[in-house]
Image 1 (tube, helix red, strand yellow):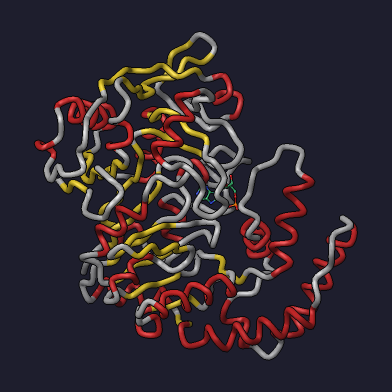
Image 2 (tube, rainbow, N blue to C red):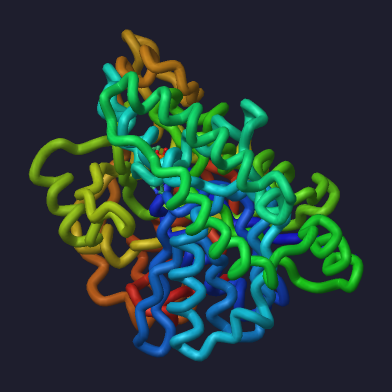
Length: 422
Ligand code: IMP
């Protein structure tokens, strides 16, 4: 019986989880997406073709890996069907490989409207992706959500009409445009038909795959510090993109988890609002953004940028049980002559290496930095750790010593092959 490998983001998302997954997908029989929705965006290049994936696990691009969207995901059928068509147009056999959980909750237009409305009315903006993710999870926990399997029940239309009436009352009070129940019912009946062939109980399926000794890779979405429980609340997403969310989002047990990969960049970034201790609001931050092309995949928003935060990384490792780090953008940081990493926080005169998401703590925390020598030159052709320049190895050795965790995958350039595997 095999164990599943899991890929998670350590900070605020966009650490390059897709790279780790893409590497593991070469060996994977099954790739799984467990949490979040189309707020995520992975860009993967295969043979020079760019694929922007929002919902379907990128493992499907190998055209031999089963792709599972499990119960923890919230699904916008329009986005999902667009992605299915896009993949089919590139010759991917989606009908053979895609499996979608009957328990995944469905995003309706009122969720998206409410997301926009609530964000506009918020005193302290979160900067959501406005894809209806939060309101869809709210309905799930409020127990009025509609799951994929509910779309085939006799009372589906009645339930949708009822929900549209209730949501319209809220939208009307806020002076927002209302949703049209007839339109939604017609549209979603069509979506239901189109999605039916992919629906199954993915819990049964995943346990069967593990018993058959298949290699299962779970692709996390978002990241640790965006976790609803362990992130910088309220500036977080509405799910648990940490290891616990992987379990509840798939039906796998703790016993079924093997390696946990944590993706990080050699620097850091954040989209949206919220505290960010190592943010650089100066020309250095701008330079990281330009060198690393740090603009949102989904929203195109410029990302906030700063140095790597090892204090927060240790927290992510503890929360998730990460045993391997995937360090991306080593080439990017290597373009600086001198760069830094945060090794402690100074909070109101006290130096600490303990991380907590308390907002006052994070606002007061001043990063204590250690400097490193950059100027790595072109490292894209380095195939082994030993091929890397000494200063690059010094940085990686330091990360390993600080965190007690092996840096197993090292991104040395944008292409698929620019990755050192140790
Ligand atoms: P929501 O998930 O759309 O509700 O957005 C909540 C917060 O999470 C916002 O700050 C978003 O920018 C952030 N967020 C959500 N998904 C991602 C992601 O995939 N990468 C980076 N940030 C994300």
